[in-house]
Amino acid sequence: MAIDWDKLLEYQTVKVVKIRDKRLGILHLLFMLGIVIYIIVGTIILQKRYLATENPIGSIRATLLAPKYRNPTPPYCTSSGNSTYNGYPTYECEYWDESLVLYPSTSDTSMFISTRVESEIQKTVNNCQFTSPTCTYATYNQSLFYIPDIENFTIMLDHTVSAPNLGIQYNARQLPGRLLNSSGHVWTPPAPNVVGVQSQYDIMTVGTCLAAAGIYNLDGPSLSNASRSMRDDGVILLVFITYSNTYTYNTNNFRYTYQFKVIKDTKFKAEEPIFTTDVNNRYVFDRHGVKMLFIQTGSIGKFDFQTMLLTFVSGIGLVTVSTIFVDILAVRLLPQKRLYAQYKYENVEEMDERNKVVYENDNEDGAKTTVHNQ
Image (tube, rainbow, N blue to C red; front, top):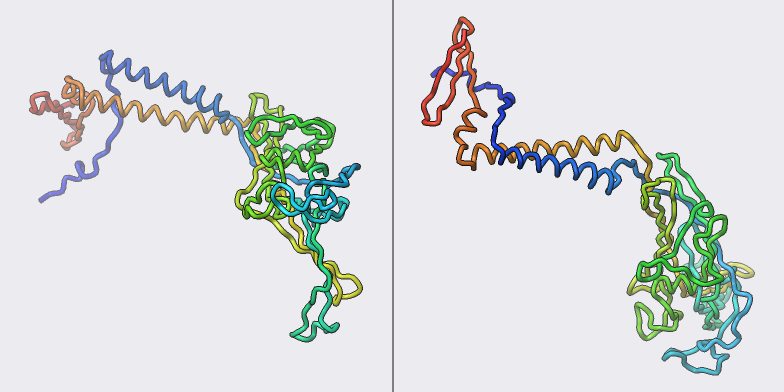
């Protein structure tokens, strides 16, 4: 059997056929109108797909300051005369300043503020040396105490934002900012809090930070153990600093937003050894408190013609989809489908040696009409 190479290696090309059918014409025009509206209004304008965007990076500097006034008889301290407060035992209180409360003293991405400390004085047994594998510490004195008025300590936050690929960089004092409460609404806390004022550092009390996360009382049940209070057990907060210049159509309008989120079913503690005369003598501070983890996030955008063009071209692909759909409707579903299919699809074969072109058309009755062109 001879192989029909022309049929095996046939080439399909596009043929333009004008079908004068208002049903198909109106449907195709509606598809085209919808696609244009989707590309220009929905994608380019509303979704701002004309912007080249970048996730910002930056740095954070956070410092802590003790309040000038310290309450001498907080209700959770034994100095108040209470043995219990809000259902939890009271402890002695020690009035540490910010240098002792904050541990470690500096960190780029977090801040740990002590609320309850267990202090131990330890010495090596019989002044043994660590060259011996059996040398261990023994505790000779132990105390447990709260650090009062933690809610009134103030935190100063200074941060920078940068989108290096877009050539954008700002310091927080150059930008307006805002604070969201636990419900996600903009909140302006009272003095001494200062948030989002240009040319000024952001200052928030620890109590304000806790309230923004939905914690209004550290003497409530711990998030991980209801038999202890949050002041006793500690708590972890995520601090999201979100930067944006795409909330309006003017990309010169930059702003940042603080949002505090508490991590459920958690507590936080850290142990700090402090050596005194030598390695054989040390204090150990077992700290519990408020741990804040700073996370810089958001999206920075800048107009980019290539990005807009790519968005437009990718949307144009929907035109092909609409044309295919209307074609299927014309040749598969309408009553005139056989006639429309006859004009849409045509086989052209070059068969004779004198370059005569043979056109074969399928008629509506199934017969073939062959036309020879010289």
